[in-house]
Structure formats: structure tokens, C-alpha cells
Image (cartoon, rainbow, N blue to C red; front, top):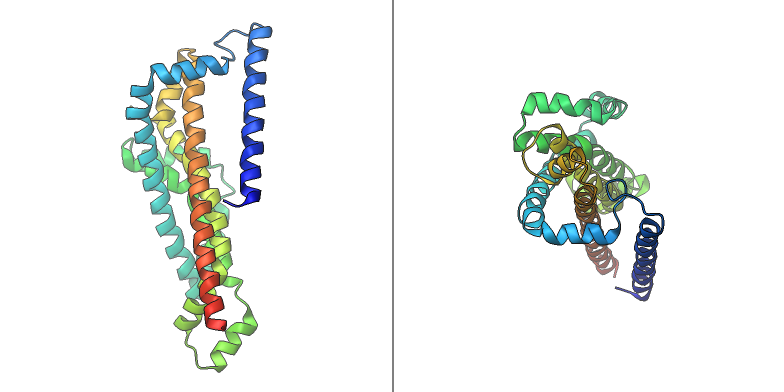
Length: 259
């Protein structure tokens, strides 16, 4: 982590500390009922008291749904992006439907996916894919299409075939756009898994939070939300770290070839 990254982390820690202290002070000074807005200390206490249930069971259930759904979405999105890149009829037929799919509220489509795939793990994965495939496929496809046309023409005059152009030019050009879409999808995946659990589940942080809300257990509800947020942040940071390493390696390879 560079100096800029360390300063960002320091300022983030300071802002979080101010937020937590202010939240705690407001709850105590205004005597806000805990079932409306619990103080951070009550949320932390609940996390500790329910640590075995939350961390040992519900957290891993949701994390499994998120990772399987995101992995399936990457495979599906990349396959679709590659098909649209190599075969123009596929792009003309499929791309409009990809856009149309985003004009329908995803929350309205989720019950349909549950109806099709059931209340099992496959249903949660399907809803997670529904939430995440769009930024992945659009990011990958747009990235592949943004390759420099003059460079493509130059490689063709040098005898490069379509696969060589794809490997040497289009993939490196597509990486920034692909990772931008993947970072968005990583955060959306948590929402997809959570909604899948809301619609029907017997385990997971979404299920736990829904039950806590129905029983007016606000500290437990906030604890589940905190863990869901932590999953999203960690996935985003992990994706950003992979992006940084891949782009650095890509630049080094490019510089080596130019040298």
C-alpha cells in the first residue's frame, strides 16, 4: 500500500470512529428506544453474544451463495461477452435483450426465479446471477470493443489472425472495463443473495435479519446488516487488489515486448 493508500485508510478509520461515537451519543442523549435505533454498543454486544450462530452458520451460508452466484455470473457474462464480440449476429440479437432485462425491476423478477429454481441453494444462486451478470457482461463486452482500431488494422497488416488480435490487443484493452464491472457486481452479489434469502430460506444472514426485524430485535437486525456490508466491502477490496495485480502484470508484459 502506497502513501496515498495509507492516508485514505487513516481518514476512513477517523470518519468511521466519528460516525460510531456520534451514533452512540445521539442514541444515549435522546434516549432513543433500542428497537428503533440501537446504539453501536448494543449491536457489538449482540454480535458477540450470537457469534456462534452468526459467524459459525448464517455468515458462511450467505458467503457460499454469494461466491457461487458471482462465479456463475462471471462465467455466464464472459461467455456471452465473447460470443457477442466474435459473432455479430449474436450481438445484434442478444444485446438488446440484455438492456431490456435491466428495465424491469430486479426485485420483481426475483420471485419468478424462486418459482423456477426453488427455495434451495440453486434459487439463491440464480437471483445472485440476476443481480450481477449485467455489469460483468457489459463491462467485458464494451472493453473488448474499445480496442484501438488502428492497432487492429496494423496487426492485420502484419499477418495477425483474429485470435492473435484478441489475445494480444483486445484482452489487455478490456481488462480495466471488465474489472470495473466486476467490482460493481461484487457488491451487487450480496444484495442478490440477501433478497433470495428474504423470499424463502431457513438460513443465511438475510433470513436471520428478516426474522430479527419481524421480532423487533433491532440490534440483531443491525448486526446482520453490518456483516452483509462487511462481505460487500471485502469482496470489493479483493476484486480491486486482483485488478491492481493483473493490470500491473499486463503493463510489465507490454513494456517488455516494447523494449
